[in-house]
Structures are given as C-alpha cells and as structure tokens.
Image (cartoon, rainbow, N blue to C red; front, side):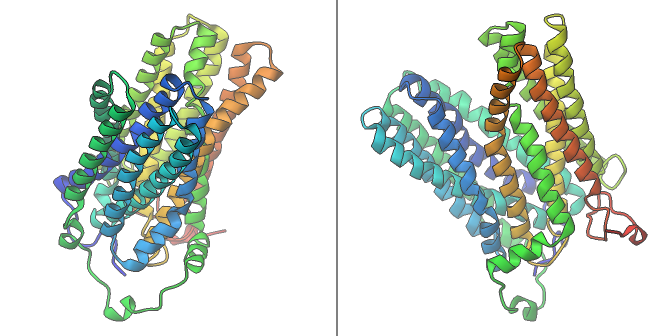
Amino acid sequence: MRSMGAGSGLSWPGILRLGLVQTALGAIVVLTTSAINRVMVVELALPATLPGVLVAVHYAVQMLRPRMGYGSDMGGQRTPWIIGGMAVLAVGGVVAAAATAMMGEAPVAGLALALVAFVMIGLGVGAAGTSLLVLLAALVVERRRPAAASIVWIMMIAGFVLTTAIAGRLLDPYSGPRLISVSAGVSVLAFLLALVAVWGIEKRHAPVQAPVTAERAPKPAFRQALAEVWAEQDARRFTVFVFLSMLAYSAQDLILEPFAGQVFGMTLGETTRLASMQHGGVLAGMVVIALVGSFASGTRLGNMRAWTVGGCLAAAVAVSMLIVAGQVGPGWPLGPSYFLLGLANGAFAAAAIASMMLMVGKGRERREGVRMGLWGAAQAIAFGLGSLAGAMALDGARMAFADEATAYGAVFVADAILFIAAALLALRIGTYGQRSAPGYGAVPTAAVGS
C-alpha cells in the first residue's frame, strides 16, 4: 500500500501540470454536450430528447467508476488508467461527431453509432477522472489538497471556454465533414496534452512504498472491496451527501433560463447573459476555495467541512431568493441573485471535491480508487438524474398551479430542501471516529458515538 501524501508532495507547477489533464478532458466533453447537441437539434431538426438520452447514457456508464478505481488500486498505478481513459474518450469524441454527421443521411445507423460513442465517452471520463483525483490525493500534501481540487476544476472550465471559443469559429459554416475534422483535431490535441501532462509524474513523485509483504497480500474480489468501503460510515455518508448535493445542483440547469424568460419576460439574449453571470459566480466560488485552501489550510477558515455545509446552506438561501423574486416580479435584482447562486454552488462544489481528496485515503488501505469511484459514480448519477428531475418537477408543478411564478417557486422549494438535507448530512461526516481528514473537522476520540 502507498501512504497517501507522503513526502514533500507535488509542487504547485506539478499540480498545474496534472490539471492540464482536466483541461483536456473538458475540451473533449464540452463538444459532445454543446456543439454536437446543438447540431442534432438545430441543423438536423432531431428531437431534443435524443441528445438528452445520449448524455444520460454517458452518465449511466460512469456507474462503473468504482470498478475502474478498484482496477487502479489492484494495479498500484494510476497513470495507465488516466492515459487509457483519455484515449477511449478521444476516440469516443470523434465517433460521436461521425455519428452525428451520419444521422443526416442514415438516422438509425447514426443513432446506433452515437450510442457506442457516448458509452466510450462515459468509460473514458470515468477511468481518467477517477484515477486523476486519486493520483492528486496521493501526490499532493494534505494542506494543498483543497487548493489543488479547485485548481483542477477551474482548469476543466478553462477547457470548456477555450474549446467552445475556438471550435465555434471553426465549425461555421456547418457541414458533417467539418464537424468530424474539428472534433478529431480537438480530440488528438487534448489526448497529447494529457499524455505530456501525466507522463512520468507518478514515478518521479511516487509516495513511499509499504513493505513487500503488504504488496503481496491476496487481492480481494471487487465485490468484497466495494462492500468494505460501503461499510465505512464516513464513506457511505459522503456518498449520499454527494448524490443529494449534486442532484440539487444539477436540477437547476434546465429551469433557470426558462424562469427568467417566462416569469420576467426576458429575451433569449438576456437570459443567456444571466446564465453567464451564474457561471461566473460558480467560477468565483471555486477561486475562493482555491485561495482559502492555499493560505488558510489548517485553520478554522480553511475547514472544508464548514465551507461545504456553508455553501449548501447559502445555495438554499439563494434558491429561496428566486422564490421571492418570482412573487416580486421585474423590480427584483435578478442578475445579482443568479451570481450569488453560482457563487454558493461553486464554493460548495469545490469544497466537496477538496473533501473527496482529503478523505479518500481515510479508511481501509488500498481502497482509494474504489472510494473515489463510489463518490464519482454518485455524482454522475445525480447529474444524469438532476436535469431530468428538475424539468419533470416543473411540468408537474405547472399542472398543479396556474401561475408560472408559483410553479417555479414550488420547484425551487424542493431544490432548497435538497440543499439543506445535504448540509445536515455533511455536518455528520467525520464526527464519528478518527477517520476524518485534517481540514475536514476532525474531533477528539471522546466524541465517538453511533
């Protein structure tokens, strides 16, 4: 077994280097969720449900994350899983573009190929993303992990922004071959970037190895390893927390812009600017956690559990403000409200990711990949269900209430309740036993209970 965070740890340039893997991952994924999505709905005039189902498939496949994490645990190295995952993801991105282009001439064959592509995308994201976070947790000393978590996620967002800005120019005017060539170019460059970023870094900064006898211990079956992790109270509670909080986070996606349009009468351009303000708030929240993790680690201000709980509660308050906004009407400052919601979401999400890195090595040895995979699977499932659940809840509320503002308000109430439930659950993580990580609210042994 490798001791987590042994030695002096990875330097800041090393953390930024590994963050390039997230940039590369985000560059490929964003084309499938934005450009390809738009082509299916607009240029090909296909039902909007189709790309929604394909994205749901990519999330569903990520339920295999614990199995992938187990594979990297038993193999003892994360780099092959990162490189292999990025290779599968890159090929999946090109196949998705080819399938989309094919749909214009052969819809059934194109759809079948698209299903294969999005399965590959889900497998690639799961393998590379899970192993990258475990590798970061292993190579980065604990005091830097909160900042490292925020940095790699900010770099993934940078991948979103950079790719959409450049690819958006290259994709006009649309044609099938152009879509394939642009996707292929992005995929190849992203894979090479990830390869350069990760090559040799694990060997050069590898944590101290345990005695040889421990390395030769019998390898447990996957089901046994998963059951052992699920039996850990903190790991189990954190899994449920991730699911609840990310469900609340993603449930907002499909209703915030329609809310501004239908209740406030805003145009498409105006609601798009609101969405930009919200995403700006998310980025600002992540930057706050990165700064706090860098300069206040080990202090009360740097306690990631407090930021996680506080971020969830702040998100509940921000969502509740939108309920009031719907009743007040056009006089309400909607822009600042959206920014504050994004700020709360970004802070709690970055703190939760930092907590994953702090807690992943706290528990049974050589289960870090399974543990991170379990949390990643919970996040993927929540993301896959969240948007659909939010849209369905809105449709149900519209049937129950004649007034649009009241219907949206009912959905926002449910979302706020989910955030509060997640905050209450986060309060209980790490308060029993001594498994809690520094910076995540460890308590004296006297506090042990059930």
